[in-house]
Image 1 (tube, rainbow, N blue to C red):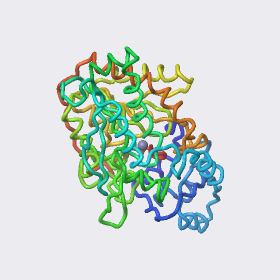
Image 2: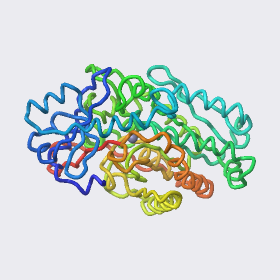
Image 3: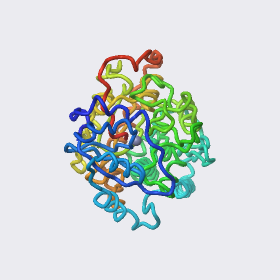
Amino acid sequence: MRPLRLLALAAVVWALAVQAAPVPAGRTGQVVSVSERDFAAARLGRLGLDALMEKDGRVYLVVSADECAELARRGVPFADETQRLALAAVERVGAGGGVNGAFHSPYEMETDLRLLEEAHPDLARLSEIGRSLEGRPLYALKISDNATVDEHEPAVLFAGCHHAREWISVEVPFLFGKYLLERYASDATVRALVDASEIWIVPIANPDGLQYTIDVYRYWRKNRRANVDGTYGVDINRNYGYAWGFDDQGSSPHPGSDVYRGTAAFSEPETAAVRDLVQAHDIRAMISFHSFGQDILYAWGFTSEPAPSDAELGAIGRTMAGLIEAVNGTVYVPGQASRALYVTNGDLIDWAYSLAGAPSYTIELPPVDIDHGGFFNDETAIAAVFEENRPAMLYLVRYAIDHPLLRRPLSPVRRERSVLSQTRKPKLVLRQP
Ligand SMILES: [Zn+2]
């Protein structure tokens, strides 16, 4: 479901991004749905609830027990969707052992990355590019011929898990690295790409948040920054340094919000680590994986104005969509981020693109919507999701090898003044992938 086709709530719902209620520790989310009409009539947007998406005239919310009681107090009819959605998801996850099943925890990822490096010492080098707030290593796996040598080859970055609850986004970049290493000896196409490039895999940009989704709260999104007002978390995909804080629709100044941008651009060690990695190498393309929605998004996110390379970004996006669809028939829709979903500022792809025009994409992995699992991918589908993305990832590496960048940073932009006093219609902000 494409959120922008459903704009009935636009005037009230923008506040969802502005202030989200703190999540009580120790509970898993309860998902309820309310009708759009009731949502608007009861002005629920002002409560700052964690809205996952809108579909078929209903708004889906993750609520605490207190928030649930508040809905009842206001006389808002709601349907408890937890049984139908979340519990079904719990049944799907877990066969691989532990709460997170076949999905990686940060520690499990560390182990598997080390095993890959040990098995392919000439082709893989694991480096710690920083530490999270809670002290977890942030890992990048470099894959290239002579991986331990800096050969100044064109580089491509594949990143996952900026958002903690988007578990499938960890697995796709990891499996791509594994695929390249295991196929190098036997597959001429893989060998040619690896020989001519550096491929950087950062499967978990937000390990603290990921651990928190495993231990405490499955719907957690942000990192685990202790904010001054007692809330937790910065949305690290609103913390990058291009058009950071441009307006209060594309990110929030309120620490409790699920899209809180932090106190300054790159205030978070997780984003600073990715920044330093990108700036130290000749990154010519990247994909930042997220879920859910089946979208291929490109700059600009902060404005609906097209990016200078709009035609090229769109053409690459459409090519990747075609390659993906050819595998399993799954449709991913390419489009400019701000137009396809909603405005975002301070995200990775706007910043990466702004440096020197590198084609940079956010790919929203399956499913297409919450009725097909939302953030809870079936662990048995991990392989299929990777397989359908693999040709697009290989294509983007080839593209990066063949195409030099603009080599000229785009002009910085400043925060829009008096944005809140402007009369333009606020944009609908519902799902926050
Ligand atoms: Zn996301």
